[in-house]
Amino acid sequence: MTTDAQLTRKIQALKDKIGSIGEMHPGSISQQFNICGTPGCKCKDKKNPVKHGPYSNLNYTFKSKSKTKFIRKDLEQEFKQYTANYKLFRSYIDQLIECNMQLIELRSKKK
Image (cartoon, rainbow, N blue to C red; front, side, top):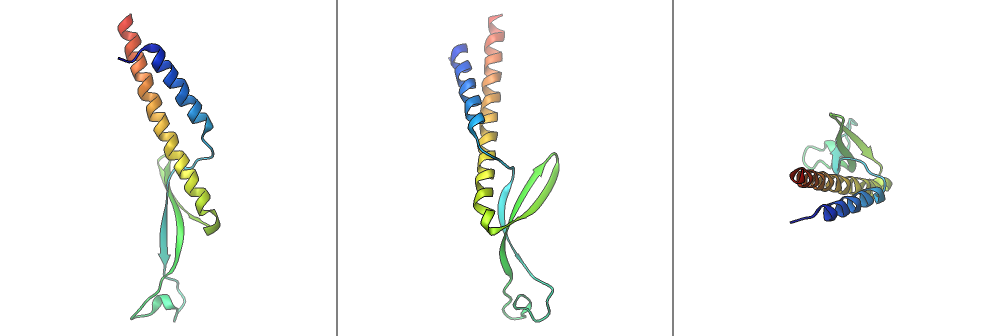
């Protein structure tokens, strides 16, 4: 059985980890290929069309609004790190909530 002190230490460790996470952004990176409007372009070839791209997109939902943003190729790795940091943040938050719920349950049994 986990003790009050163990849970308190774990909660503090999670808070420390959350505080050390760098910049973050919700979402995921995907690739998109496009067809342009230029007549005679290779992307409009009837037999062997070659689409333009790939272009990187950041897809995310924040405050119940879904958005997609194009990400420049030179910023793609940075945004992959931002989204990875966000996933780590969410994981730590879930663990923190779980530990707090256990702590409250443990303390309520003592009363």
